[in-house]
Length: 66
Image 1 (cartoon, rainbow, N blue to C red):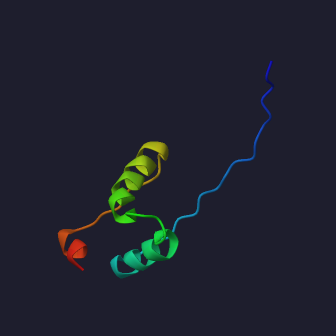
Image 2 (cartoon, rainbow, N blue to C red):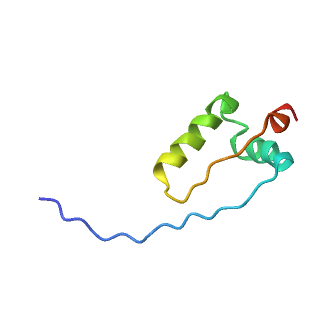
Image 3 (cartoon, helix red, strand yellow):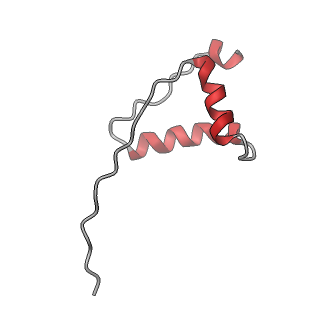
């Protein structure tokens, strides 16, 4: 039988990123991932499902055009 060992909690830190810094952030951390722009929405949706306190990303049409 398996015995589960107690694990330490993991802390997730958050930082607000303004709309101009957003594209720089994605290119810096995910620039080598093919088609990262396509999976961005999926990542936000997954975070919304996994984390109670996650408030999602709020993007306006103006920001998308920037």
